[in-house]
Image (cartoon, rainbow, N blue to C red; front, top):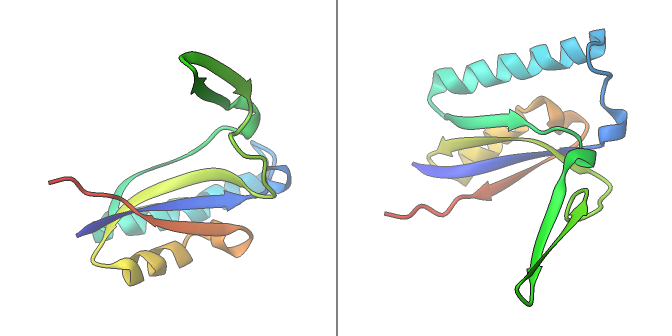
Length: 117
């Protein structure tokens, strides 16, 4: 089976407040999805990220390390979470991605993972 990253993008500013009823409802939707892909054997790994304000970007140029606060790219949507799954092909990975709750208001990038033998 091939491995895929399902990268969940959305607008951090429109996310429900932590601890709110809306956040609990969103979390429950993700729990249902996660349990379904664990049960199907597709799930390999997955977690949400803290806000991009907690990110540090690292670059090495000319042997010197430079760091800056925030994500590497400033974009309309931010990388919020990921699932690493296994699927028989890209079509199956896309079907899994389309069931992620965040696909209803953001976007899911399906990216094949290189497998070294």
